Length: 65
Image (cartoon, rainbow, N blue to C red):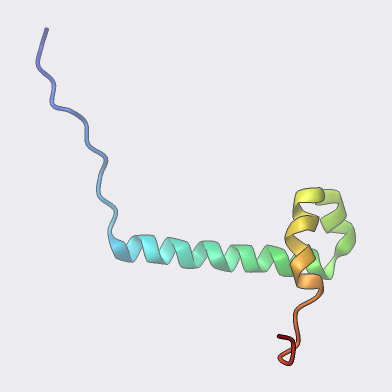
């Protein structure tokens, strides 16, 4: 049997990880805003999306403790 070097995953730089996370957060915010502005679209997207939006329906006021 030939000896093979074990394959290692390429390293991803911290800068790339941070930029991808930031981009993902922007996309998430975009879709949440889109669904919040269009409840019919959110309803068509399903219960999971509606559950994501539920905490947005009532945000505590600054005086809530």
